Image 1 (cartoon, rainbow, N blue to C red):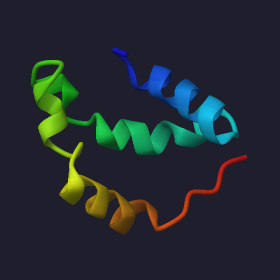
Image 2: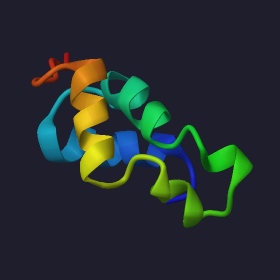
Image 3: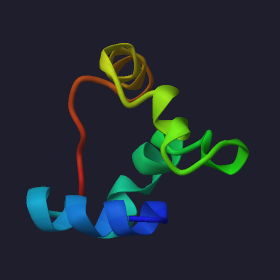
Length: 65
């Protein structure tokens, strides 16, 4: 998956709602993608501390449409 939109579509299929509901979360998770390679950007928040940071930013639960 090369663009956050595809992650949003996948999340909507898995958890319900619309792809746009997940855009802020996936944009945040992929924010380092522009400055690094396709795999290295995952070092920013695709790990345990990244999840904790995401919970602090977005909350414990996520409400979709």
